[in-house]
Image (cartoon, one colour):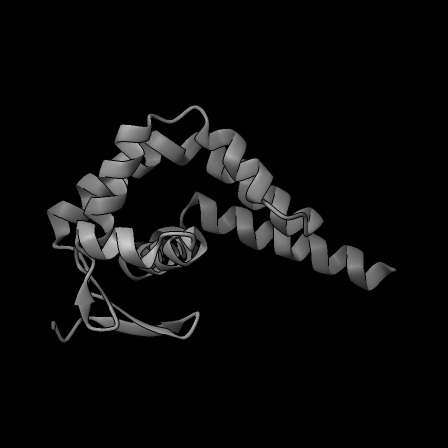
Length: 143
């Protein structure tokens, strides 16, 4: 395990993520932006401004994404991740996430946080989230 690895308990499971090498991170980021960029801002904004459950919105925008591309990218993103000290191989993926895709999505969220924290905090998406939170706090305080 790398000294850069981050560990978090997610749904009672120990998840350890080793950050991607720089060029790999850049390549995956480009794929993520291409795949999710146009819809991600809408989803984040909607969730933070209304508090609405984003699951139906996510399902809708995932309909336009190639299943093969999404599956391949998911496998790549999880390649440097341990679940309870086990590498997430295809067999582990199939066993651990059968009937529990929510855990997989939470783990993917942690992978993105470890590898792209600066993107979410300082880039356009981070600014959208901050603006949406401020708007929500302002409207809540005014009530």
